[in-house]
Image (cartoon, rainbow, N blue to C red):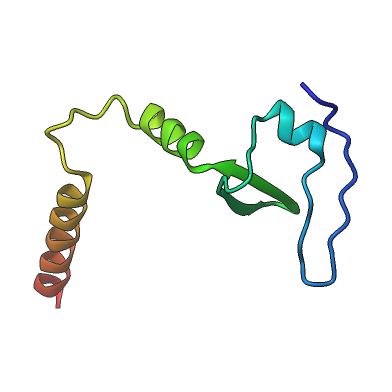
Length: 87
């Protein structure tokens, strides 16, 4: 893997250039799309596939027939009903 200590200058329009050694090490090609996010005071660039893989791994213990959205909606309805009964 290429050295992680590559200095990159931010251009006038906010553009950055990823050094060739990093592009090669990460197998980045022209047209590849990366997602950017702030993590503390760091900028993280990741492939969408990497994020999707991490999320699938995080939630793999949940059975495929379980809908987290439906569970959340049911919880909110129960809370709303309890609040309306308390008044």
